[in-house]
Amino acid sequence: MVNEKNEKETTLFTVGTKSISNDEFAYLYKKNHQNGEEFSGESIDEYLDLFIKFKLKVAEAESRGMDTTKAFVKELSGYKEELKRPYLAKEDELERLAKQAYQRMQEEVKASHILISVKPDAPPPDTLNAYQEILAIKERLDQGERFQSLAQEKSDDPSAKTNGGNLGYFTALQMVFPFEEAAFSGTIGEVTGPIRTRFGYHLLKIEDRRPSKGQVEVSHILVRGDGAESKKIIDNVYAKLQQGEQWNDLCAKYSQDPGTKDAGGRLKPFGTGALSSAPTFEEVAFSLENSGDISEPILTPFGWHVVRLERKIPMPTYGEMEESLKRRIARDERMQISKSKALTEKKQRLRFTENASVKSTLLELADSTLTQGKWNVVKEDLPGHDVLFQVGEKPYAVSNFLQYVSQNQRSTNQQPNAYFHQLYDQFVVQTLDEAEDLQLQKEHPEYRRLVTEYREGILLFSIMEEEIWIRASEDSVGQRKYYEEHSEKYKVGERIEAQFFASNDTSLLEEVKSQLIAGDSLEGDAKDRFLEIQQLKLFERYDHVVIDRVPWSVGWHEVEANEIHYLVEVRKIIPPGVRSFKETRANVISDYQDYLEKAWLQNLKMKYPVKINKKNKKEVVKAILASQ
Image 1 (cartoon, helix red, strand yellow):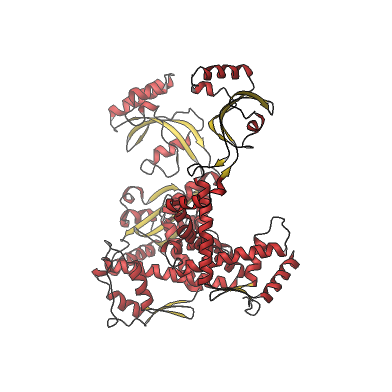
Image 2 (cartoon, rainbow, N blue to C red):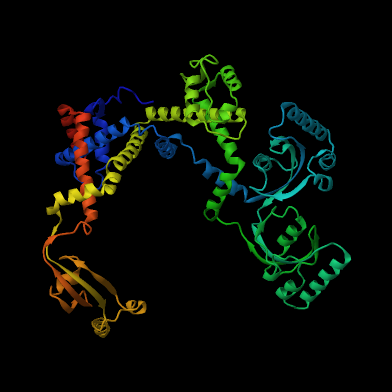
């Protein structure tokens, strides 16, 4: 914990009623002068002037409530999430889960399960009955009954009647997350559970583990059906392949897979567990050793197949899979489960306690007006000062939550109870984030300074956009007036209207000169023969090296610069004068912005008087110079 006495800051200047410390100024001066620049009293004075102007603009943005808008809060919150990570010593959750999934994908697990179905939102009695039933099965297993037999007898998974609950081999991201967690942490031969997933309660038995086989890409010829006629056709196809007939020809003629028959029967690459509906096909595909190897006819639920190996694909590196893994995980339930766990940990760390009775009373008042976005709890129903929850020593009253609801409630198709919990949870998360942020700012001055920088940077951009940039770019009358009142700024010397062509081939330049004098135009292909072409425009002195070498007289000129030959046509000589408004409009807008900003700053200085503490200024200058 930082000693508060050591953090006591001396005021360098005030803007209105707000004090800016020596420490803040010194920190930012040093941060913005890190490119080998010498510290000096002059540069400190210049930076102080800029810093005061910056603080004036921030003060005005705050007075307009720009730091309370939803857009501002959302943008700053996003930056804070990035800034706080080093101080929480916590890896990005999406990154952690992606690495965990990749690590698990190096292995394949073979498992069997018994399922007792119960919906996630089932009434408590139904959930309890399912739980007691799975425990009773577990007890029978502990007493020595066979897992396969009990799966066939008791499991609500329809496939268990035929496969005894055997799920075959699978890897990460192929099962629901709680099931995957148990499978990859269990021990071969042991029964794990009960495990709750969105399908119900499971008992899980790990049968085997093996290194990942990566992916395989195969082609197949399919004859649908399992009867004698289908078997006769596939045997005939296999015999023709053995005799050397072309795979693609036979596939196009005999295969009954319309999606692949005209493409040689090629399927997309797949890994272990991807073809759970046809495990025999998967097993045979992975058993083929070399590209071009062909299997004997095999039967699956889809019919008879002959399979040819195209290639085996080893596991890609994490770098190659990172983006696709993160996209999948962002949509996976493990992300939500992880967030829920992180929230529980944060509640414990920040000492979150909830007043369950007040929350329950408030929930009873949630009716259809809430889902219409019109919920309004009156004081007679529930006193607003009642404490809803507490974070550390700080209480949050019902009125705080109701204010949040008033600002965020929207019309929804959800039930009032569900929507109440959604808003309540959002309010809790926001409150905890704010408490965590305040704690970090108190404990870590460098984090506090970074947050202040980002906060005020967002405010500066917003106020400048609203007050100066948009106004200057859209105020065409003001632009024109400024141009007319300051026309001397847009004076220009003698100019020429010219075009030129550059090439190392002088004969090409002569050819184009003849064409242009004759009134012909250059076609696209002809233009590609030149090193550089500049079409007709106005040039000033020093605009281009060739313009400085060519005589400023109407006509055709040939000059050389940097070992390149140029053909230049000067059409007009423009005498000195003032650039037109259209010609210099971009410069006018920029100058007009500066003009508006100076006038605005004068008003801000009157609105928020600036007072510099001369004594403290001497101290901060001395300290900065001594620190270099």
